[in-house]
Image (cartoon, rainbow over all chains, first blue to last red; front, side, top):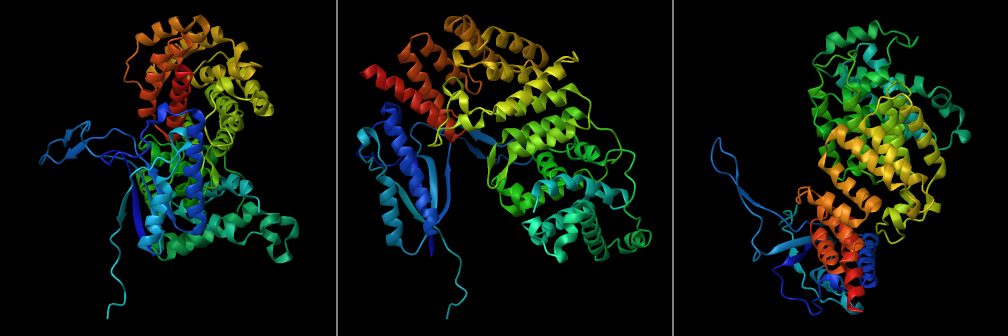
Length: 135
Length: 391
């Protein structure tokens, strides 16, 4: 098994095919989208491939150490040009092919007009643990 | 097995161990071990219990005290303070007459000790008073079990020097219980129901109208829970809830408790909040809500707390009582960076007929929403208005 991170972006990913902001959808389209996302996660829980899923607020701040006895320096809110992560799902699957397949399914979630969004998701493999048997 | 019984016995058993001479931290660990043991070995169905498992059912408290004391002694034996504690074994008192002061109440005070952070006080209360296992608490707050175990040990170290027999501050206990209630539920533990149980138990021990006020507030909000979410998990605002799904028994109990508390004429913020919840519960339809009285209660609350969130809620009530323009005027006096300010503004502008502004503000409020359910709800509101305007 190998773990993968599916990253969803507010900003920074290439534009999706069906690029309409959610507040311009109909309430029914929003419901259909939510249902699709819930069903997707529920299915992965059943197959034993789901690990975690979280959503992030759109605002954030850069922070760094500023030396002994000083408050950390902050730089924020994020500039409009910054790549901005919206949330993630972690999956634990048998192969890279399976990870691709699932990312494709998630990207097909319906949006405006009930049509798939074709949203670009970032697929990132986790660095694993060293194997016990190496010879 | 009756898990509710088990939990209600937890603080009593812990109190007995402390009175026998165990220090609080070690006793609390021992009781936790006994609880885990009870969950493992007590029969699932007491009526079907064989003679070998009959003992815990006949005297569950005695069983817990015996097992917890044994766990405490086992731990003490392997401890550095071995000699001192082993002397306790020899002079072990028999479980006997109830102590003069109320151990359970003392535990409430200790677990909400002012030296604890809110998250520590919550965790310690749920374990030592509530009788939940570390795993259950960790699941409820979505943190790893090891993290929650550490949080609880640190909390116990913090209160290690506190006197067990000192009277505490009821207000700090109420704040902890309020936090537990507001967390809602996830995992297999219903924190709202647990908070109600713990507040009920406290109300039976402390003669304070604010304890009654908090209990009433919880019951009145809990009564609406089934109606608060749609089958697809989305939020249903108060005005659109199916009032037939409200729990009338819970409402009646909450109103009764509140009336008795108010009659004592020692108003506090929980009683005032409960009064507002009761006025909502009392309205057969959203249109029949007595908004004028609700505004008056918000005025009382403002006097009691001067909390900006109260002023924000008051603006909504003013909008209902005196019209959306009056609500917007009340809102104009408030800091726009307050949480949910944009959502309130959106609602009042919609009521005022300015749908374009309302849609824009709903979308803005969705961006700032503190959780997914609210974000989805606000996005839907924006979508509803945008769809309406484009047709």
